[in-house]
Length: 207
Ligand SMILES: N[C@@H](CCC(=O)N[C@@H](CS)C(=O)NCC(=O)O)C(=O)O
Image (cartoon, rainbow, N blue to C red; front, side, top):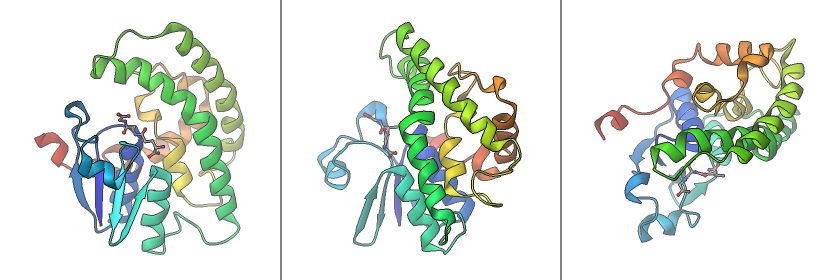
């Protein structure tokens, strides 16, 4: 399997899952600043021109959540459960994409990505709206996690990797994580995993 990645948000969760599962993956780094995700060759794999992309034999997969599920299914991991829990995992992945990480992602883009790639000033109206929306959804997650270790069932799943993806950047992205004690505890639990703290292959340091 070959995983095209870069050291940004969506690939982070796929790299974390690949490392956690010790998946047999060859990593291929794309330098977004140099437009390596917009070459004709890469666009033939991922017409969105986004990272990550996974190539597994004849199968080409884009969308980080689908890639995480595929990696887990490949080794029959409970990260992608095969029973009733699967519906709950899908529920949280969907909620996350539409709400929780959508709003945190706006903050990550405004405060981190814009500065990194020289894309202009922070849009204050956008960050105000995103912070309010994030807080509203974080309150729902915080209640859910009050008496749970992980999002679904008793074990970690791809949903935990997906929902937490912006939280390592909370301070720099002005995400008000500290207001939500149960989310903070849950993220500390994830931080106990090497794969979560340091998901990217060493290659990134060489680039
Ligand atoms: N829904 C996609 C989002 C992928 C995505 O937006 N990737 C960003 C990095 S986090 C990217 O490739 N940005 C480069 C660009 O848009 O030019 C997924 O989950 O894989």
